[in-house]
Length: 384
Image (cartoon, rainbow, N blue to C red; front, top):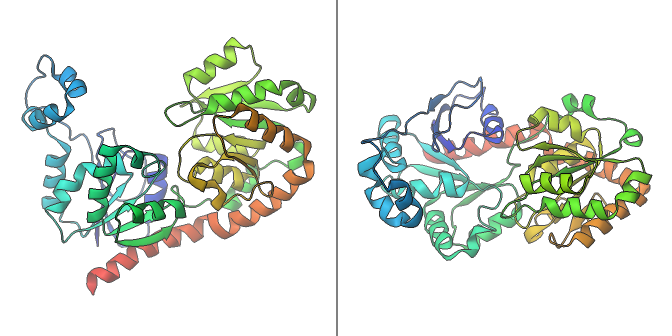
């Protein structure tokens, strides 16, 4: 079977592809955003560095792309090689059996027109993050999503919520199950990075602050109860910090350690989670957060927002974590952190519950087989 994958380069895509290392599937990857090669030893053909100009940039072109995007889109094929043009060329050259798009807006919607011209090619879509939950609320995006879902044959999600949304938006294809976006974790190997629970002293914070990220509210909450944090000899570490979060920490002279968006490798973040007592993430929209799953795997007590009730698919409030129901409420977050610090028994019991969740749902070999079975099921149906 020839499988053509489309995505931005990311650690999650690499981890997904590496599950297919020992299969007989012929793998191709199209760098749809033209950002560079994937760092992987898996044998696959990488289609990169494709975005070429057909003529020199013309005055006003950038302004047109921002102010009149629909008009710019019409003249773009005369100026440069477009995604549609390159993708069509790839399909005609490779003639894949299956196309698999990761993420809706950068890797799926842009190829709809071409995929409609090749109805015999099966199309798989992996729903990530805010793909459907957030963007369904914008009329233009909603229309694009509905049209795309009508053509897609199969989808995989990282939570049940997004499959339900997809059905509401007109998806009638086959759901191939729930698999974490980054697939599984090698639990035995990660055990070495997990400090004993009674020696952990870090409150770890995801510092995203953007259109859906609300990391700054976590910092404000911790600022409110700073005396309580210090009394318990806890230190605050922020990862993935956007500039507004960094500015707030510095302006208020908080003794918090922070790392910007590129300050830690994935391995370093996992090690830090293995030293953390509590891990907090907060946003107004998300799928099943990978950092939440990593906190569960590494034994850190999760305090996590619950947009669209997605987090409650894996966290029982006050059992194996705490759910933030209002991501804009600094007081609610402060109350949750205060409760967690005060409840040693809850934190210890959560470690036991989450360890079992990790074994039953997040283990690498288990999810690797799910990924392989996903494609085997499609291959079987192709042959029928």
